[in-house]
Image (cartoon, rainbow, N blue to C red; front, side):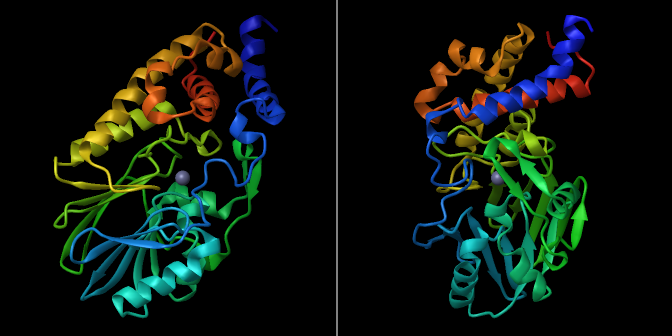
Length: 319
Ligand SMILES: [Zn+2]
């Protein structure tokens, strides 16, 4: 086998070994929670977005609640550990016992934790088809050192799509669409047009580098494209809801896009030089962005296998 062939074969194995050694970040040394997952131990807080939309935070990922005369609609449902509390709060605040519609912005458990409870009650669950497929499968998330079991049948999305869709609900026009191969390969946005509220999910990160979940096909270049698409959908006064953290704006999407587009180019060049994850971290390609986005260790470590997978799927030589 020639060198190029060897590297093409060995790259994922090398990544797995590097990740298994745990030498990729101080934060991983004594994990208190699963890396990359939203905290679940805080108090639940409620923030008004408009007169009919509010945000619940603290129970895993952000939960966006739309309270309308036609019923309650949620975008994401928090973590399984906090689902009961989140849903109790939704009922208290809306005075309605049922949730009519639930969107899943992607398959991660900090977003899909209310699927089972709501699915059992007959709530319509809308997601990208790839999200439904991941939820039917056992996912070995190697970068998190965690295996996620398939969800029970009742917890699965009941309505899936591939590209875009629109829902007239409660006097709102709710547009939704796919952000291909970004944080995962099933990310969607949900845009409340009249209210001017755009739910971005985990494609938008606050105060930390975004997660690139390469085990379910997340990719830095796709994240750059996604943040541009979301910025293009937004106006200056659009309220943009990240996967975790406070309300953001178009300016924040633009800043993340700038960082991702620049780093896609930089990391691709380093990969083309044959660099390992360790080499890349030593080269400090993110240095001028670390002030805003924090420790780049997990980000670079996850960008690397995503770039390798992408290069392989396109049949491009990476070294
Ligand atoms: Zn996520």
